[in-house]
Length: 171
Image (spheres, rainbow, N blue to C red):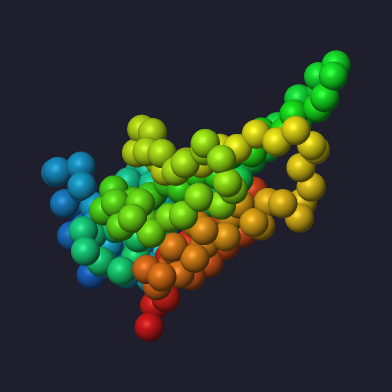
């Protein structure tokens, strides 16, 4: 056949993709499971999944591998009340269960009071309400214990958006 053709001159299907990764595609189609042992392998495998029309989010970190991700989220809500304003701030950590188990023992409460880190539906979360309007300067104080716990487990920041993604360094 010619370049770009999807069949050979004999009529056989031709797919110009990585022969090293194709067994992962077949394995996923058979079992519904796809694991990557590094961040690089996960990225390449997700690209292959997209090419074949499969959900790239199905690629998971292999248990015990050093390519786990934890998402740190912070959000706040300002409630305008007649007598005094109230601000609610929520910090959450979402990731593999064994990582959250390790983090749970490392986390400290960022603000004095009744609030503590809690495990809800596989997510570690902390919430606090304040009488005064929260400023951007207060948010880092609330995030600090989570960041310190992630760094103690050798996670590092790999992206930033409305929530940050942390993963292991690819040393």
